[in-house]
Image (cartoon, rainbow, N blue to C red; front, side, top):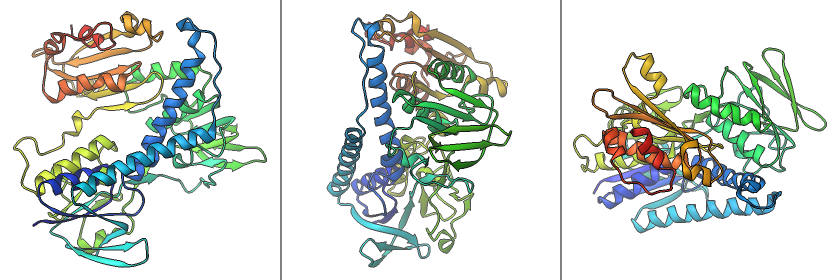
Amino acid sequence: MTKLVIIGGGPAGNACATYAARFGADVVMIEDQIIGGAAHLLDCVPSKAMIATGGAMAFLRRSKGMGLEDVEPHIDPDALRTRLADIQSRLRDSSTSLLGSQGVRIVYGRGSLLDEHRVMAVCDDGTEEIFEADMIVLSTGSRPRIPEWADIDQNRILSTRDAYPPPEIPEHLVVIGSGVTGVEFVHMFNSFGSDVTLIVSRQQVLPGKDPEVAAVLEENFLERGVKLLKGARATSIDTTADGVTVNCDDGRVVAGSHALLAIGSVPNSDGLGLENAGVDTKWGYVEIDGDCRSSVPHIFAAGDLSGKLPLSSVASMQGRKIAETLMGRATHGHNRVDYDKAASAIFTEPEIADVGLAEADAFSIGRKVRVTKVPFTTSAKALINDDPRGFIKIISDPATGEVLGGSIVGRHAAELISVLSLAVTASLTVRDVYDSLLVHPTLSELLSDAAE
C-alpha cells in the first residue's frame, strides 16, 4: 500500500488526500492551523461572506429602483462576526468529516522534511512523530506579505487577515494595493459605509487585467466616492492620535482612520526542511513540473506553495491530479493542469470574471482573434434586476470559431463565466454556445448573443 504524507490541509491537500485514499493509499495529513486551509477559510471565504453582506446592504440602499421604499441598513459587527465564524466552522467540519470518511489520519501540528522519505510532525501537544513516506505532498499555502515598513498592530494598521471583520468598521480606510484583493476590500468597506482611498501604484486598478474591464471598475468606484491615488507607492505608515497617515514615494500623504495592506502573499515554505530533502525553490516557492513534481520525483507541491495561480480551484485541481498521478490513475492527455484555462473572478460590484486568452494578450503576441461584446443593457433580466452595468466579451478564433477566452463584467459574472470556462476547456466553438437553448429571461442569454 502506498504511504502518502501530506503537509498542509488546504484545498490542495484535501483534494489529494481524499482522492488518493479513495484509490487505496494510506494517507496521513499534517496540518498546523485549520483543516480546509488558512488562505481559504481565513481569507477567501470570510472576504466573500463580508462582500455578500455589503452587497445586501447596497441592494437595499437602491431598493427604490425596484419599486420599494428607501431602506437604510446598518451593520451589526457582532452578528457579522458570528456569521463568519459559523461559515468557517461548517466548512471546516465538512472537510474534516470527508477526510475521516476516507480513512485519512489527521495529525494536528507542524510538519517538516527530515530527508527525502521521512516527515516529522511536531504535534500541538508537544509530542513528535516521524512518518516514513513513499510519496510526499507539500501544500502549506501562503500568508499575507507584510513589508518591513509596515508595523501591523491589528488595530489601526491591518493585514488582510485582520479585517474579517476588523475591531471596528473604519470611518476612512486607506487600502494599499490595487490588485484583486485590494479592490475587493475597497468594494466591501465602501458598501459598509466607510470612506475609502485606494493607493494605485500604476495608472489603472487591476494592472494585470483587460484595461476595458479595469475602466468599468474604476468608473464605479469614482461614482461611489472612492478616491483613487494613481501612480503612487506607499513607503511608510504613521499612527496618529485618531488614525493613520500613509506616506507615498512621490511625496503625497493620505490620512485615514485605518490602513489595510493588500500587496500580495508569500509562500509558507519556512521551516519545511526543503533543504534536507534537496527540494529546489525559487523565491520561496517550490519549483514544479507539469505533474506538480518537485526536483525530487516523489515529492510534489501544490496550491500557493507551488507558485502557480493562487486560486482555491487551481489548488484543488492540482491535488486531484497529483493523486491520480501517484496512484497510477492518470488519464493520458488529462493528467496535467492547464493553468491558461483557469477561470477567475473578482467579487466587486459589478463582479468581474475572465478565462482563457485575453484580448490584450492576443494582440501582444500577434494572434488574430475575433472579439464580440454585448452590454448588459440589452438584457431583459438585467433591467428586471435594475442593474444593467457591464458587458460580456468573447474571444474566438476567426477561422474555426473556437472559443479562446472571454471576460464578463456585471452581476453574477463569477457564475456566468462557467459557461465560457467549459467552452474554453472543451474547445467548443461560438456556434456551440449560440446553439444552446438558454432560459429566458436570464443573464446567461447574453452569452448566446455575444456568441452570435
